[in-house]
Length: 214
Image 1 (cartoon, rainbow, N blue to C red):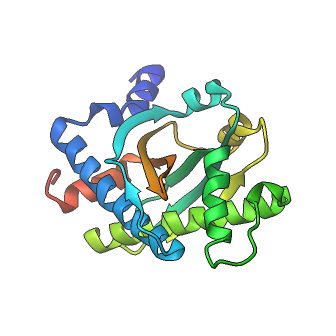
Image 2 (image 1 turned 135 degrees about the vertical axis):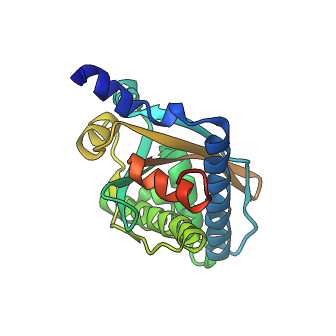
């Protein structure tokens, strides 16, 4: 087979899902994100409302080429599904700081603005939030599919103008699934992208468990 053609096919495996498989992935995304909202709500002691997740496929090259300023991201890998399952969580820096403010001020102590903290402290707090999101999401996945996953410690990009370089240096796979949703509390809406980059073997684990592939 022509190498160029083979590479193209491997990159486009997500877009080749039929309607049934796409619906199954959307339902999986919905369940996982619902668990995340519950976990965040318990930490903050508040009701968290979420929008119905919207799912689309994306390419690493698109993220790199976007050169998106004002965005922050965290990258981590997940063990226990296949050889390579990657997670990328992306928010605007303003939304990330707003979420961090809620976390560091949730016990009613003297108010601290996340924007006033050092870059290292900001990265640590954002990384902790991302760990909670990822571990909660895959805890739900584990329960549904009898898996035992382990989320690695996230790498965090929180500085200005480093988003594209961060994507280039972290993501190994070329294509993934973007789960786009918004969380709201106290009339404040935060938008986020939970980007799942599983290799085809990872996705087959899910499809096989619900009988869509033999």
